[in-house]
Image (cartoon, rainbow, N blue to C red; front, side):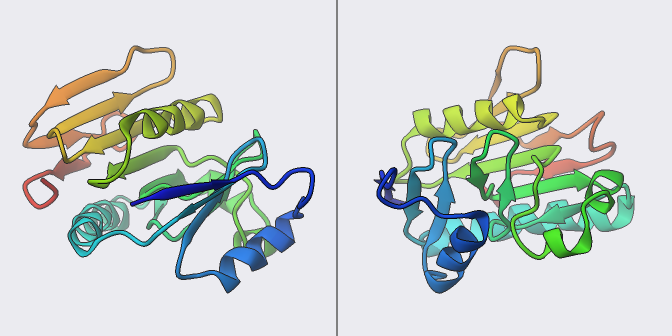
Amino acid sequence: MTVLILQTRPALDMTEEQFFQFCQINSNYRIERNAKGELLVMSPNGSETGHCNAKLTQQLGNWSDEDGTGIDFDSSAGFRLPNGAERSPNASWVRIEKWQAIPPQQRQRFAPLCPDFVVELRSPSDNLKPLQEKMEEYLENGASLGWLIDRKNRRVYIYRPGSSVECLQSPETIEGDPLLSGFVLKLDKIW
């Protein structure tokens, strides 16, 4: 997935509503906005990456439905982080009480929160460093757990607040405990 960064400030400064509408009009692209207001325009994933992301989302969704302590999101969900960035992780999960604290009307747009759990799946054309920076941004904005899955090198980077990044080489599974109690991601369909 190729990322095009458009530095639009000060010439174009969109409100939250205008940015949401811009994303809706350009729905063939995955669009994020970083904390500096720059637009990050990404082409759709390749089919293989899309399939792997579907398997990831499926497993998280199945666990979330059974667990009932939160709700899961796919890669099309956008979130407005406390630092002002608007991001769309490949998969994410939010504790139910945190979600319910948001007025229903705000849930229709990019929810003003950082998910408690985020996953980024590296596409073959993604550079690793920007994804690692994005994972750090999630932690700085309130995420409790993050997984960066690097299919290219068969590595999983695990992010937790106040801890060094843990790197696993070719794991068969990853456990979400204690935040996602009982969630085990099977990586055989993702590698």
